[in-house]
Length: 227
Image (tube, rainbow, N blue to C red):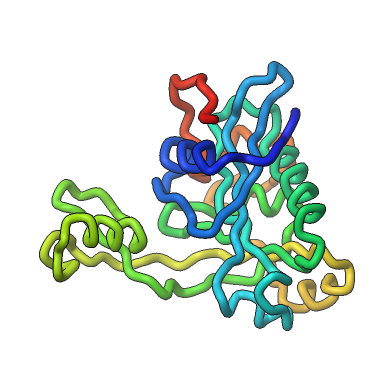
């Protein structure tokens, strides 16, 4: 498996085609993933996170970041390995960053399988701060996508074209890059949310098989690499 810095075009393509949110994160950077056959598998994407996201760790902008997308097409050998390698590269490229955070959407039935496999700290459920919308075809639209469409179509009010729907809670996870933050992250941690099946065991090797349920990737027939 090989990773390299991803272009914006690659990030956009993977996020729109391989991830359930169908949205490109703002101010994002990421890493392209290639498998052992040198086939393009998608991207792992980070951004600076919410402006208040570092408060629990007493970190300011630049000292924390969010793992915001794992947008892969299923051709990777092991998703957890791809994410681990991406984190290693991100840490090298961002030496001042002390901690990563990430979220799993309860509305999508996500429980953070990959974060459990990689031993991230679970911090509980977070209430949403932004609304979600449903278009006339019943498709759920993220607030940033709705705002973009509203501007492009010169529409005054969201309610003219969308139905507001209840946003869902997110499971929050943290991963300290600076060893000094391990005690703090551990003190903020809670037991992992229980999987809603009879078998709650999680292993790193099982992550790739479970990611379709987690909604992180949706294989498609495309084999081309956005440049």
